[in-house]
Length: 426
Ligand SMILES: [Zn+2]
Image (cartoon, rainbow, N blue to C red):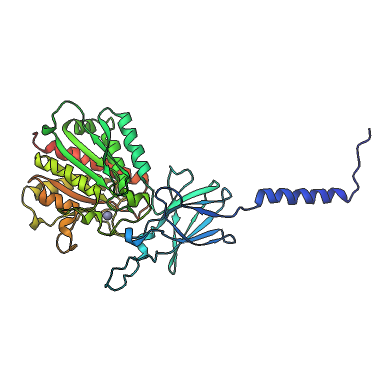
């Protein structure tokens, strides 16, 4: 049989058709879409530009539920390896009060880290390159090697993350129990890790309380809490000592409702979680925490209380404390010793995580509701030897990553052990 001969004009035509067809398959771009129908998500899309392959947006939070600076969403329809541009503007959401002048929107700098955070699998979070400021916009680019990408203000830490962490720790160790601090006003469980090892009776144990995320947007503080828990349940001999000599309560997320709904939490109505430590708290988490901490105080063993936060964009301050003249000895001396030990450890991470060893004070000149700040409430209502502090971990830095935050938590836990080992046994 003779091979079929194509006329000379047909072959180039065929090649042209195939090239065109294959070109379409290889290079066609899908339309970009934004998804925010998942826990912790927050975004208000302004524009999706197919031509520029960009998404313009603001954080999506409602100002009545806290500072609208948190953003977290998913972009779909990507060609793996293509560069996507994120154009971020500050939120204009405000929460006016009756008979008060209209409030100004939150300064956009709170929403604009130097680097955006992104992930293609929702587990491993990476920083983008530094963003660039263009008038009111912050512009980031990401180049994910996947058809979709999660982008966020910082590494997200949602109620599901907290539940998973607490469950994993209690499965891993016989000395850790998953408990719930309480149910929130919206009915969500607030996971808590409760740690004790050995037969030492409770009354002979130091009481250690660690809570994060009274402000929902401060996701880094939950990663610090997780780092604390991971070290505490590690094979380190010092960690074992702490488990054997203390009873430790660890709550990775206090304001679970605003965290779940992607709201900021800070200055939420009717009041901020960390201005709620009054005789009649509004939030269930604060009621429950006050009750448990109050129990430790009654037993004379409220030894270390740590309230974990992320600070203002450029604030390198490490600890926030109550003014010395509002406290009695030995509280000041013990607190300063703890700061010395903790700073000595955490500052080793410098210059990766620069922090100032000069604490800021949170007395009357700091806020009109200063008495209702958790750290202050515990200082003022605690035992004479209670060490009560707020730790602010910098968020706008190259190492404000899951690894960096967890390293701070691990070092903080090691400092708690070192400090308590110096204290007389009960
Ligand atoms: Zn805070």
